Each structure stands twice: as C-alpha cells, then as structure tokens.
Length: 251
Image 1 (cartoon, rainbow, N blue to C red):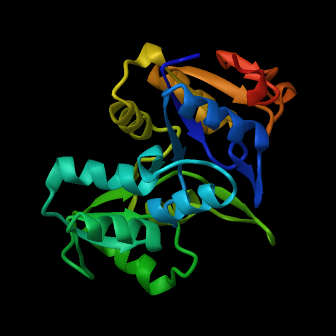
Image 2 (tube, helix red, strand yellow; image 1 turned 90 degrees about the vertical axis):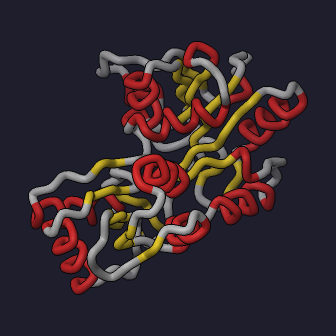
Image 3 (cartoon, rainbow, N blue to C red; image 1 turned 120 degrees about the vertical axis):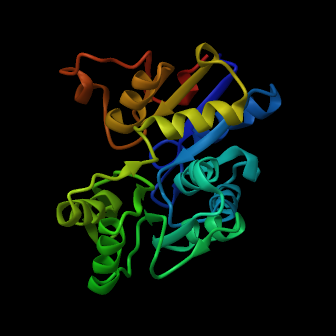
C-alpha cells in the first residue's frame, strides 16, 4: 500500500450510473486504515459538493476534502497568479461556483483571463467574444483537454474540442489544468501533503491517468474496470507501475 492515492472517477469509482463495488470496498479500507486519498476528475461541470453527494449516494463514505475537480485546480492557479483577476467565462455550474466562491469577478469584456470549461449551451456569440478577449491580451486557460465525451446519446465534443476552435481562431494555445497536465497532479500532491514516492495514481485511461502520472513522476495503477484493458497497453513503451483487473487485487 502507498501512503496516499489520487483516484480517477468514471471507470474506477463508477461506470455510468453504476457503482464499481471493488473500488467502494477499497475506499472503505483506506478510511479504516487512515490512508489519504483524493478522487480527481477533469469534469468542470459539477461542483465539488455535487460530486461528493453523488459518490455518497452510491455507497461511498467520502467528504469534500476527498474530491479534486479541474475547476478547483483552475481557480487555485488563478489565485496564485492574480487573486483580483477579471474572468471571461465559458463553463457550467462547477467552474462558475468555484470562481464566485473565491471572489473572482466574471465579466463580459476587458478580462484578464478567458477560462473555458465544458459548456453544453455555448453559442457562437460567446465563442466569438472569448476569441476577442484573447486577441486583446487575456490569458487563455482551459479546465481540461478532453476532446470527446461519451454520453447516453453517443460521443459528443468535449471541452478540448471547444478550446481547439478558439485556438484555431486566435492562434493562442490554452494552458490546460486537468489530467494529464501537471497542474492537476501538483495540486493533488499538495492536498495530500505527501512526497511523490508515497503516492500512486489509480486510473483506467492510459492517456490521462497513466501518462500523466508518469510525466509527473509518481507511480500509477491501471485498472480494467473502465474504458481500456491490459491488452490495449501492449504496444506502448511506458507501462503502469501496477496493472490489476480491479482494486480487490491491490494489496
């Protein structure tokens, strides 16, 4: 066992609307042994409270201190850079709530930052305004680089796809906050208050969870409960530290 864990949500803690029992049992064990952990998610559409309530509703025993969202990481970055910044926002409840909670002013123009999170209701006028703010000098920040999302209706554009449109127009690349970028892992390590050698990332996605952990310099644990299987990793040079079918195998 490690002294602390960063744990992905979809595909590890649950799959769609169904709990993954082996992860729920693993969290119970961590709670009993007072081992530190945080669930980490690129999803910026839900608040930390909503994520926590959802986990508890499907049988987990967690509190908000056990949750890290890309919204929280984004706002933490802004606080360090300029706590009085004016923000032009594309995004939903999660990122908006986090900005407002930390007293950032959300504006329609003359912004210091353009922050983009997943927004299911974004329109052409909002995208055009974001582009203009960036061209006027605002710094371009994105909660995550996920290009696609799997919904009940099928595959839909993710936040990364929205950002690519803005990037193509402005020729300015955003600074991404979520996995596999380092900001998420740095914030997670800071929140756990542990050293790199004491922490492992648990995930089902090779490209975000495993590669992100490798690039940051911490151990990784790949589980087959989500979107990828061990066979999918055979042709990749970089391997997870540990590969398991599910978290019941983790000792």
